[in-house]
Image 1 (cartoon, rainbow, N blue to C red):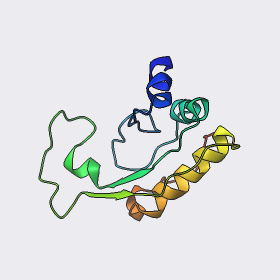
Image 2: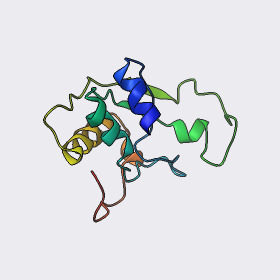
Image 3: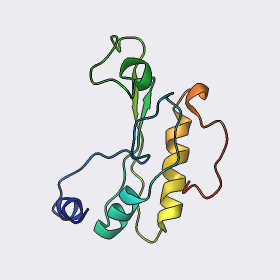
Image 4: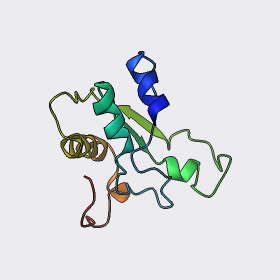
Amino acid sequence: FKEAITYLKNGVPIMAFPEGARSPDGRLMPFKGGIFSMAVKANVPIVPLSLANAHAVMPSAGFLPVQSGKDKLRVFVHDAIQVEGKSEEEIAKEVKEALLSELPWDQHPLEEEEGADA
């Protein structure tokens, strides 16, 4: 965690997934707080990436892709979300809204979990 903050402060970007694990069914899972805390401590923006249908190409239980991503996998790069002056909860909400805006409906959470960060 501390090393990642040092990298960020030195201008080295890192890639992290807010759920902390790969989804078994492709649905967006509740977020962990680590990446939002790192971004706030380093005062760096977050650039959300929506990965549509990644679970079909690279299942969570697999080590290698099970099929080609051609015509299936889609990556969308969102605008940067500034963190200055925002709480981690506010940032998580903005990231979640961005991710869901470009994910197919079958990758949206089935129901909101109480106490989830976003």
